[in-house]
Structure formats: C-alpha cells, structure tokens
Amino acid sequence: MKTILILRHAKSSWASDTLSDHERPLNSRGERDAPRMGRLLRDEELLPDLILSSSAVRARTTARLVAEACGYEGPIEQSRDFYLADASTFIDALSRLSDDHSRVLVVAHNPGLEELLDELTGEDERLPTAALAVVALPVERWQGLRADGQAQLMALWRPRELTF
Image 1 (cartoon, rainbow, N blue to C red):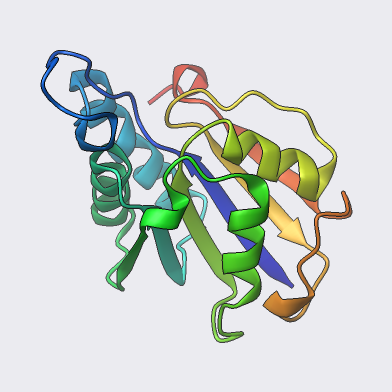
Image 2 (image 1 turned 60 degrees about the vertical axis):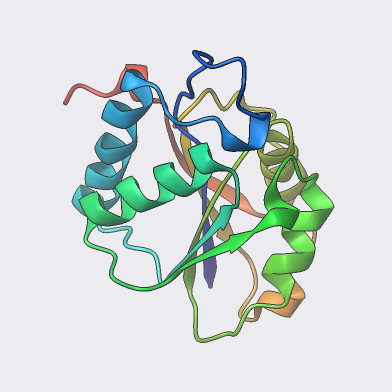
C-alpha cells in the first residue's frame, strides 16, 4: 500500500509589494506552524520516504522546516510544475515515482491540493495553511494511482486544532 501525505504550505507573508507571488516567504505564524507539523509527523510515525515540493519559496521553506522537525534526511525534490498545479499534475508526477517509495509528502498550494484530496478520496475537505492530510492508496505501485475516489482519508490535522 502507498501513502500520500498532503501538506499545504504554511502561512506566507504579504509584507512586501516588490516580491512576486512565487517568491513570498513564510510569515511568523508559518515559521511556527511548519515545524509543528513536522513534529506531528514524527510523533505519529509518519516519516516520509520522499518529499516533493512546489518551487515557491513558501512551499520550499515549509518542506525544509517540516523535514528538519520530523527527522527526514533525504532529498526534497522541487518542481515548478507543482506551483499552483491542478490535481492531474500531482497525480501524473506521483504515478511516475519509483515503487521504492511507500510514503510521499507533497508540499504545495490550494486549490490544487484540495482538488487532489477530493479526487483521490471523494472527501471535500478544506485545507488551510499548514494543514496535513494522510491518504492511504489502494495500490501497490505508484503507476496504479487513479483519481477515482477509492483512496481513504486516514487523518486530517489543521494547525489550529493541535494542542502542542
């Protein structure tokens, strides 16, 4: 069985009018919430085998902070294609992964991540910044991934709901 950890990037800053949307950094809340979600992954024993991230600064920073907090030591693969991607872009990328990876963390943006969650599980859930969804896939190989609503939403955490 394969598992996808879907993580929306942490809260970003709108303080600078000169930065492009792609270059916006995290704000202080985002810098606090990203490591919290990493500690949650560690505590729930959900260490990913691979982290895939949008190339946007806020997503890359979220991925790095989560990786540090959960103890992930592998590569963080960045993709410009994940910047404001739709669900089919994520599914295409995931379906090409090596089957050596069982649990993959995807760090990116809405509305694409909410669409991905809905298409995989049939669950229409809101993913605010730094929200984390755990999706169990009914496939043994990544190439078998389909947007057919057959995956199972195992857990969904939003930062404001955490007690630590």
